[in-house]
Image 1 (cartoon, rainbow, N blue to C red):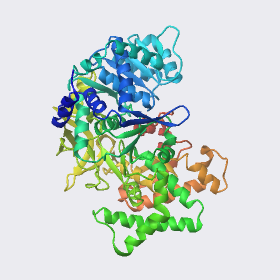
Image 2 (image 1 turned 45 degrees about the vertical axis):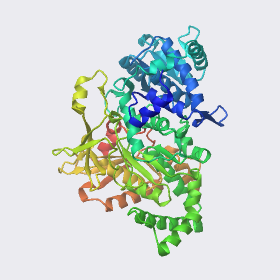
Image 3 (image 1 turned 120 degrees about the vertical axis):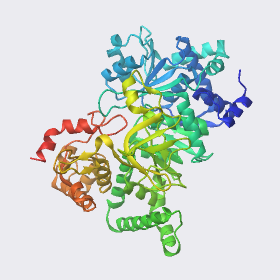
Length: 611
C-alpha cells in the first residue's frame, strides 16, 4: 500500500506511473477541496469534493474489475460531457483498463465499427437514444458483456444495467476488499494503454489513436511547467470528452486541483452558462467564439443610435489598447483614459455576460482568425490559441499570457522538440505525448510516425521566439489551374470574421482557374436580423436567399478580396439554404467541416460557379 508521503514525493520527482496514480495523489492530498461542480436534474449546480469523487470512482472501479476486465482491455463511453462521463473515465483508468471514446452523434454503423475494432467489452451509454443504437447492433457486437446506462431503465435480460445499480454493486464489492483499489492502481505502468480515441474522420474510416498513461502524465507535467493556471482558478468544461481537447482538460483538473464545472449536454447553453458558473477560463473551438462574437456585435448594434455609436467607439479604443498590449506594454496618456471609459461603458458589461471573471479563453481544434483574437483581446478576454493533434494528446503548442502573438499557436510546451521539413514545410515534433500508434494499423502508423517524430500534415514556420505559425494543411492546399497555391482556411476564417451573420465557409478551387466559396448563414443570428428588417417568421431557407442577405455576404467578400493577391480572391459565392450540422454530416462531432464531403455533396453547386 502506498502512503500519501510517497505519492507527494513521486509528484515532486515526476515519477507518477499512471493517470490513476495521479488521481490517487490528488484525492489524498486535497480530499476536502471541491474538484467538480455539476448540474442536477433541476439545473442546480452541485459541488463534489475530491473525497466524494474518489468514493464513487472506487465503487465504479470495483464494478469494472468485477466483470473480469484487466490491463488495457477496452471500456467504451458513448455520451455527451457530464459528471458521469468523468467518473466512468476515472474508474476505467483506475481499473487499469483503457477508455474507448465514442461520439454520441455516431451512427449505429459507426458505433458498431468502433466497438468491434477496439474490442470493447463494457459500454457506458448516456440515455435511451444511445441504448437504442446499441440494441440495434447487439448481434454484431457479441464481445460487449454489459451496457451501463447513465439515465434510464435497464433491460429485463440484464444486458443493460442502470448506473445506480452498477455503482451499488461496485460499492459492495469495494467494501469487501478495500485494498484492491490501490493495489490495482500500483500495477499500472506508463507504457500501458490509457485511451483509445477514434479520429472523427473528415475522410475515410476513423482510426483508433492509442494514447498511453505516459501521454497524459506528460501533458500534466508540461502544462504545469508553463504556469498558466492559478490556485483559485475555475474551469468550465463542456467540450466533448470523446475528443482529445476535452480529455486533456480533465487531466488539467486533476493535476492542478482546478475546480471544474462540467456539463456539455447542450452546447447552445455554453455562453449562457458562463454567467451562472463564473469561470476564470474555458477551452472551446473557434466556432463558439465566432458565435459569441456574433451575439455581442448584433446585440450592440441592433438598436442603432447612440448605443451603437458608443459600442463602435469603445471597440476602436479597445483595438488600439490591444495593439499596445501586444507589444507587452500598457496604454498611457489619453488612450489610458479612453480605455477606462470604454471599459466602464461597454467592455465590463460584455464580460459580465461571460461571468465577469474570465482571465483567458483557450482556442483549439481549428484555426482562429486574427480578427477574432483581436476582438476578444480588445474587450479584455484574451483568447490563447493552441495547437495539437489527437496523435499528440491534444496540447502541444499554446500561446501564453507572457508569450503570445496573434496569428501563431504559440511556443511548444516544455519537453517537445520541433522541426520543419525542408522539402514540404511540414511541422513535425516529438515528445512523450505522441501516440503509440493507430490501433491495428501498422502501415498507417508508419506513415504518421518517423521513429517517434509525428508527421502532422500541417505546414508551418517558427518565428524568432519559436512560436509556431500554421500556414496551411498540406492535403487541403488549393492549387489553381494557373499553378498558384491558396490556403483555404485563411480565407474562410477571415470571411467569417467580417460578418457576424456568416456561419460556415468552404473555399473551393483546386484545379480550377479561380476560387469560389460555399457560405452558410448563422442560424442563431439570422432570426435576429429578420426581426429587425421586417422578415420575422420566415424560415432559414427563405431568409438565406434574400437579396439583403446576399448583399451582407457580398460586402464581406469585397473587403476580404481587397486584402488578397489576385490569384487568392474569391470570385463567386453561393449561399446555401441550410447550415452545416453534425446531423447532416457536413461537420464532424468536434465541429470541423468535412471539406471533401461538402465538395462532393454540393458538386453541382460548385460546378455551376464555373459554368
